Amino acid sequence: MGQRAAEIERIGCYIARMTIDRKALTRQYKETPRAMGVAAVRNTTNGRTLVVAGADLSSLLNRHRAQLRLGAHSNRALQQDWNAAGADAFEFTILDTLTPKDTPGYDPTDDLASLLALWLEKLEPYEPAGYHRRKAPSV
Image (cartoon, rainbow, N blue to C red; front, side):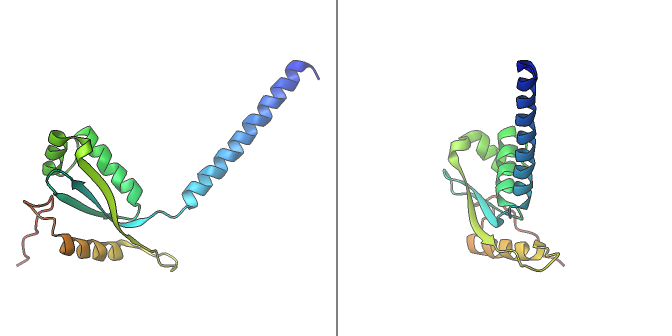
């Protein structure tokens, strides 16, 4: 085997190892449980807060941060404050986490809604002191 052929074989083995390692890392990432629960986006200059809940808190907070950076957040008051005060005036924090049940097919939706309701009751982040609007009572 010539030197060039040996070099090509060495590179091929390296690429094969990278592919296997990459697949293993991808599988590990997909199997890693995500923290679910309730988090807050808080304006440190005026204390206004947006409380959110989700099954993947890291992704949820990243999504809110990205929407704010892009000027595309659905909460106009929050977006206006972000634009005026800048990113350094905000903190993104996890308030509470939910431990998933070991039941097959467990859907955390109801548990997350209950946990969110508890935090909304505790913090009362409603306008004008927060970024939430109170829902009109049902008739």
